[in-house]
Image (cartoon, rainbow, N blue to C red; front, side, top):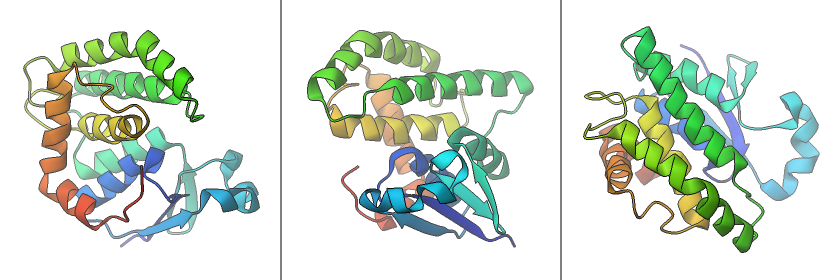
Length: 194
């Protein structure tokens, strides 16, 4: 059995998808959290000076989506065909682009302007991708559904109601949170503001 150590800051952010995936498979892991104020003392110890990282049996792996793909495959949360995976990856990358370009500076005006300028196209596109399906892949859950939930949670903290006009996406979040293993993780995870 492998030993897993996930290192990130003491909030949900980019590591929460990895925590979801580990929880989904009941994989025990060390949830190592660094206080953001202490980051400068630790930064040089990590690849490219960035987090999150996942250590598996002492080997450090980096990049959220790369780690996510690995864990999703182990969890059975990828597509059933190569074309399904292509579509799922496109959805993941669309969500990631939107979140990565978001101005996480705390400047309320900039954050609001970004959502007003870019949010409509992305959110309406994601809602169209979902269509009348239960999950992005249709009848089965994938890590794209989980990623939408974790990313939208972070955005919701800074931009309450940013997706209020997209009921299908809001319903998807609810379904993700109701998955038994995700619900159990949410109940036991450390309580942080975001």
